[in-house]
Image 1 (spheres, rainbow, N blue to C red):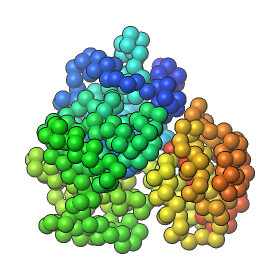
Image 2 (cartoon, helix red, strand yellow):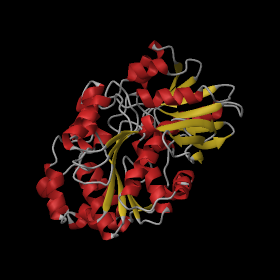
Image 3 (tube, rainbow, N blue to C red):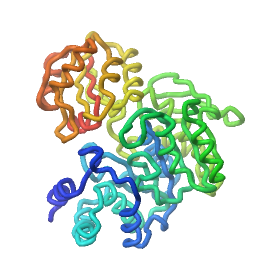
Length: 424
């Protein structure tokens, strides 16, 4: 098989949560452990950092990887989902896994896959760990795919476990309260391993405190320790409350919501330093300032054009889109053109009620099974006071927005990771 044929086989033969939803979720680690044993436990051959959370885990993972790269470490990075190319999920020093490695991995192991029927995610995690071992990385940043406790990545013993925040998402799988969702995320906290929680929130912080106490894991809440003020476009004034007057910090990611992610990154550095990693303040500054350049991260308040200003973002749940709406309210434009599509397992009615009512909407759907029909989305939006036209494809919706927007307007594209993926 060539690379495209291999991808078609992967996507058609193996359940994939991002495309299919709940049917692809497996509530145990049996297959992951069988794959890990078959490949001789490759994740034991390099150090790891584990990152979970509802929102922000991708940004935090990429910033940590970028800092490690700046410090000279050969750094693996495993994230999901991808936006343009499957290979975005598995990188070493910002360079994607080769097409040939993907092809060879699938071809060599098809008999094994036929025997145990792993999910798309289980197989991809195994591929990532094997690739990082083969490339002899020093350390890998591993982003949780879904939840934490039963996620395929949760066989690692990291140097530090990071949980960015908790909000409502994937409730059918993780639970219908913040306490239940936090309980699933807390599953990555390991005995004796330092844990960093990005945001303290009385709705769920006790879940992490209880779990950390059970397994004797040192625990810090980043928002308890860090003071961060947004000064300008991607620039922050940062200090740790006790002793670390860090000063100005520039972030290449321009979403205002990075103000919530940066403290988690900085707090995670401290246990890494204690465990012998040489990470200076300058490595931190350079890593956060050059995170896109170093890692190739896409889709986080990404500017696609300036006339009209065109921005896309992968924020897709109530908390993520609340941050987007807040930032849109600070943008300068004559009219806002909002290209939107969603998947059918989100809290759609609640999300639509927070979106700006004075925008012109372009309702569409991504080309995946989970996508909500654009006509249904438009009908729900009308009930929330939002108005616009329907378009059968993302390309058609984006083209319509471009044709109708003047140079002084703004186009925003989002609502779903897959809408952004198709625009990019």
